[in-house]
Length: 345
Image 1 (tube, helix red, strand yellow):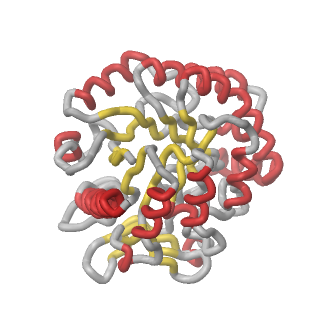
Image 2: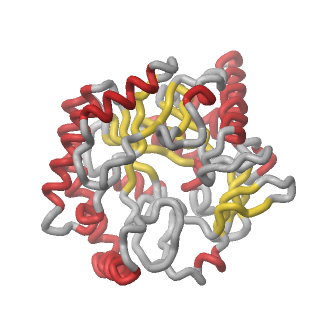
């Protein structure tokens, strides 16, 4: 297991000098954020980013994410050019030492929450998802991380309606087309492609979502029979659905060698369809982080792991879910668990 940390580049309030001081940290997970979705990343930007990271004694072996253009997800006539651009990004990143690319196939938006700064009893603040609050939101006017705010409300409505029209099976067809196009390039370049599950793992605003359950992940992996075609398994995403057994997923997919990247965070489940994000320490939430890491250890996991969303603690402000302190605590908690598992093996 290689412990890593999400870093959003030079504009991130969390600096590389902070990250390098976390014991056991091997590298950062980052991306080129200045390029519009669907375009080829400038090679000089990849080189600059890698040099900046390596100058601090860290590695840049994981990219999160190379976003998938909406035209690819919708199967529009323009998708082939965007797919060719995607292939070129895989080649460029491989050329500069990237070994794993995380991406997702979530329609319109990335992870969704009803509040980004909910105050917990201990005075910290956390991301939350309350079902009743989300159901009251107007998705054409929503402003949350992961939403592309370049769309007008009218354009957003048109996009959402387009996804409702194609439905789940249409989304599966477009995902299969995309995978069969990019995976030969990933295999040739020896890059592991690791899809991130939908967060949360159920339909929102009537839009189809398909990377949600063990059965659907099996269906996804069956699209292309090669170990490079794999998963970013995220505990906070998948385990938010009480219908999912996350530990079983780790054993099942880890045993196949198809988990290339692990996001681990804790959540407190508040009935079906609602949850609060919590500290990584198991008693703070509904997930047993020790059992989760033991499952990874039991399958001989050699991939990359990062502490996922953290609370804002000790007066810190910054990007919601991505402060320094709580994620650093989570990294050390999990590193300690892993060391114990190694010594007891």
